[in-house]
Image: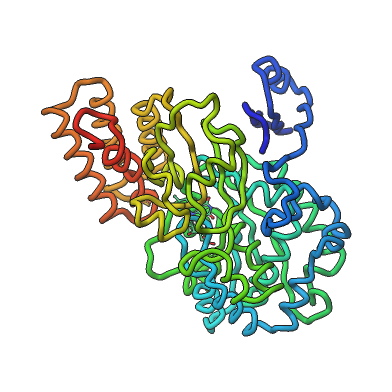
Length: 464
Ligand SMILES: Cc1cc2nc3c(=O)[nH]c(=O)nc-3n(C[C@H](O)[C@H](O)[C@H](O)COP(=O)(O)O)c2cc1C
Ligand code: SF4
């Protein structure tokens, strides 16, 4: 977790300049703009540093992220070796048995996706690692990429081996220059040492990875918008079907997986699918990275076994500072939903969150105490969706604007036709976006607002 506030200074031109600094002051930003060097950030520190039970984060802060030898000394590349011994079918079996589901937000079963691509006769197959990490409040993939870059590359290689991909793309958020540098460095070392390229580890399987940078659009984290972006077009989602497993990048069968999903595969292959599934619950196996932020004593990335309660996670992070009362928790980010102080015993699993009317999404846990201006926060979320809608389909393009307008009238205390009428309008617009938007952005653009109205006393007559 980097200290805040943070700034990314980018100056375009023949010799473009880019500097990131955290923590930063206004004077330091001026200095960066004038061409000054960024002060080095303190080393990343995880609140659970060194805990023996960590799986996904076990090497972060321990192994040198710039050294393939240190990675190997900490168990690196043992999973790939084992994958070669299992063969593609064996890897697919273990991943299916693990019941691993995607950590990018949609919770789709990874084994099902991989098998669908592996079975496609069309060639070539492509692999895309979704490292866009665009959901507000999410910073877990960054910890993995900066702290354990070889693990991401090894996991991509295993995924490619199991699904018959010769080429992989790692689509990384543009605002992550440090992670990109680490990964570029790691890719070069892996190539040099025969862990990428022609005949990986002398096993006759060829695979390589190219990094592509996003340019700051939330929508470019959507799996088909990534394809458009990689292919050199504006990042707008495609209609589904056809699904990426059949017609994906460059029109070919494509696996798209989130960074955290992929890194989980190392543990699945090294142990076994069934032993991976022993941790967590029937519907949510393994561990999950959570991004705790807001009014919490020790913000940062936490790894928890699925099934612990929200209360336990808040305790782990030191609770609300100063003993202030908890007002709400936004789960899953801008596309997620609120929980209230009465929901602290909700188990953090995909099914538990769903039953409580919210989502784990990509793992955001944004904690809000009683000082927060909830209506303003909701306005900020509504403005985010209005800004980030790609505008391709009418329900989302118009709906996000109408939603923001109705909210603004409510916040200003000037409801048109009364509070009830405005709340009904928001509900109707939300339903329309859910039912008829092309992609997940429009389908979830009203989730946070509607859950706040449902559960929290934000407006007169709401949350009761
Ligand atoms: C607007 C939008 C933004 C998204 N952003 C991300 C993202 O930044 N990272 C990510 O992994 N998935 C993101 N997704 C989900 C992807 O479309 C896709 O489901 C995911 O990458 C699949 O990988 P997984 O099965 O490993 O979760 C986003 C979806 C939508 C609709
Ligand atoms: S739902 Fe929104 S973001 Fe998605 S394609 Fe339609 S306009 Fe674009």
